[in-house]
Image 1 (cartoon, rainbow, N blue to C red):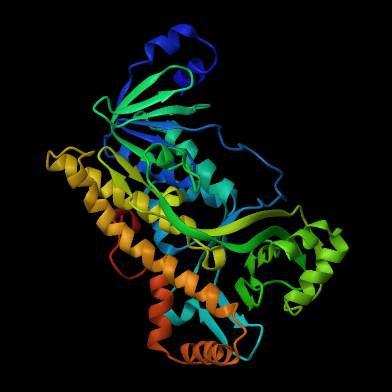
Image 2 (spheres, rainbow, N blue to C red):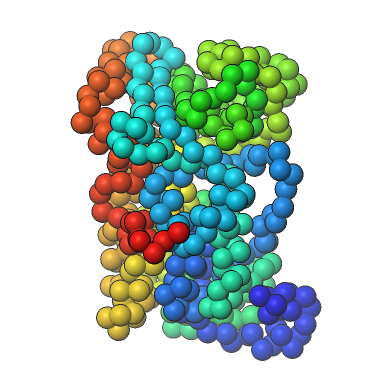
Length: 424
């Protein structure tokens, strides 16, 4: 990766030499989803350039937990195993959970999932985003066919025959396919003139790491309240990462509290399910919204991850959908190359869009419905949702189907999301 550092270390010669670089794919955004796509396609023999504003954090205090964590499904685990990064992630920290409990503030409805009931060791893993990011970044650095460039900012998107991007430093990079993996506020999506549909939820999510009085027992817990859901996600040392979705006004009040007052408020909101909250780390807050791109593709361009869809975090599905996007797009371009079809052709990319857009829209709709149903205090709806939770908990086969689907153990899956005997 020395060429990357030479390029952005101020060498005019390096900049001139790289001005007309040609690639199979240019991935704009080296976050978790973009990095996964880059690894998958480079391992298949594609020449890939990844453009990112900054390299990830390389080290941190051992007892510090990242503010942002993800609940990785079994499908995402398989993607990461097949990309040879899971073992590295395990060495940094992953936190398996064996059970999940969901209940409603306003009634007796409750559902409990247990991994042993479906013959699995766990339901998934709570993993700090920086752990996944660093493992994938290191994997990209080890691949000869990945050209990592940072800091790199796109100034112009070219989709008119001179396929590629112009960078702020004057570089002109060309590729058969440009992939927007640059997040919810995607610059590339905007440059391509692709609109999004969606709405703000009038909710903010507070994230933090807390130390409860009692051990979490490797159970992920979520309580639905009128203002929004509160999730306790287990970390392997007994702490929990929380995601507390509430109104912007209450979020502002909670963020202004000192640690003792916040712990007291959190204990009350969680019904002291793990006893008193003994300590809280740094807190962060971010607004929640639903967004979905009107199209995932243009000739020579594809959107993946949050650039294509933004989802409520109540079920932790955001990055899992993104990994499935990346794995499906990798399948699409690999199959096109084998069939000698252009990887950036609209007909090729339609295969990717057909495979992912409907599934993503379905998940967005389900999460939006959950959010609205559980934040509604109309008595008949309140009764119905509690009854629904209770019936689902007692349903046996339906309950198994729900959890298997959520884990990525059923349905149509891309190659990387399936078990491969040679994977680690």
